[in-house]
Image (cartoon, rainbow, N blue to C red; front, side, top):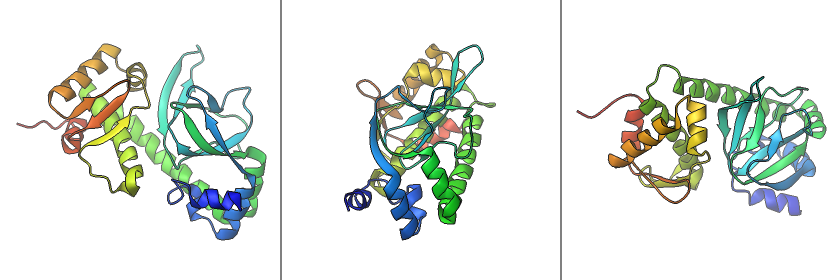
Length: 240
């Protein structure tokens, strides 16, 4: 009963993978789930010493990191509340999923979740669709760093993050103007994932602030004052 009540009160219930399941499958899934709080910087998935677990993000942001042979890291994606973290039926994970912020997740034993997928077709279909959504997101991410100027890259990343937070806030009904959130990445991380220098990223933030498109607060606080103008910068459009 406690699990059912917790699921009914979940902030991402309407858009998480479990929302597309039949009542019977959702009940079986609730039997293997446990809530976890994970501090920023902790690995959720991937790496040689990982335990095989999967998660659905309830609060916070996960960054997907490609570990290079020389030991350097490259951020190649972000995952937000309601999204599924993990690779079922795969022994090795090509990417490492790391908490970009403090997290709250619904976590599942990998083997138990895979068994459930094999016996419940609706869960298998749901995870398959989420995988295709992740593929679309990866293509969008690649477009941010292909043939775009520094201004367009920074604006595109801010648009992408803002749209995720906007959709989550009040089920997407929050006004597009005045959207406030904490950036899940530092400016150094933004520079790394966009293939830019830190100084270049800082200049682009300063330019967006000077135009009144964004304002910044303490730590990583950011407010999008003009979403339309930010979108224009992301597309390389400038007012005459």
